[in-house]
Image (cartoon, rainbow, N blue to C red; front, side):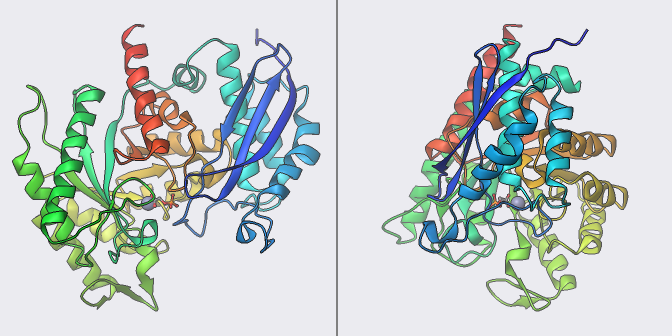
Length: 423
Ligand code: PGA
Ligand code: ZN
């Protein structure tokens, strides 16, 4: 028998995300007095096929970015329909949200309003069951929970900083059986070494970008890879059973694709030349992870790269983010045509929890690596840590070892590791 606990009310307020932009805090109250909040993250380098946020467009208020309309949609349209619904029926709650919106891209009520309500309901249900969120997610959706590998961000370029670098994210892949604190120890070591090395190049002040990596002061996109590889080879044996980290990149290539060319630091490249360039740096720097290496419409180039990487004598994954936008249909297309070997999952790209779960299930069916990811505009909500563990993701992207809104997620993973072990 399905237990019943009804939603009593929903509250939504305007707060700020880590980049100073307004976002929503949504709180779902249940009939037994329990309530839970979710704070909605914001993307900066968004895919054009993502579900759409609603913003107020009043230029005198946060330059048009206010979210009062989205809040009004929750109060006037969503709350009246969800009051009285059973919080344990997440799929039904999400179905009501999808039908109330009625558009393909959630542009009527706003993906920011929808994911706020959807995720806050999920959190409230897990609280009511007195279960940690990761456990609740794994139980209701039938996943094997696990601590994912980390894709940690050390250099921020592209739209995530004022660095002249075109590539958006330089990542360390830290995985294996090592404990979370040991991984973070390693990350801290790398971060400090990186700052030292960049200072040695004559730079006085080093800032951090949106996701906690440094703002690299030079435009040569190969230089951070060279420096990071030097750091890898100088790492001390920190633990006995520890595998050395590998490097990865989120190119976010749509952001420097202009008029049919990829505008790299040295020259403008055609898709074919870009493919050659990516293969060259992947081999030279042993890149394990290649996210959005081409623009978001170019499934064919993804496919060519994915095929080529299979010939390497080290593992290298081609991953879709803007290409697939947590959309089940796009993931199916990319997976079936073998354009990707991994996929980014961001709940606010699609707008509800159950659609996010469908995207993950599709990716699992197609044997794709699953990478649960933060957004560049984050909040102090630690939801993502539980979600990444609960769905049994292979990797998580939660930022660098810097900036509070990233650190809360790592701190939650430390707790979850203990919770999993004590079961
Ligand atoms: P975002 O991008 O700025 O849209 O969050 C992050 C990413 O591309 O992975
Ligand atoms: Zn990305």
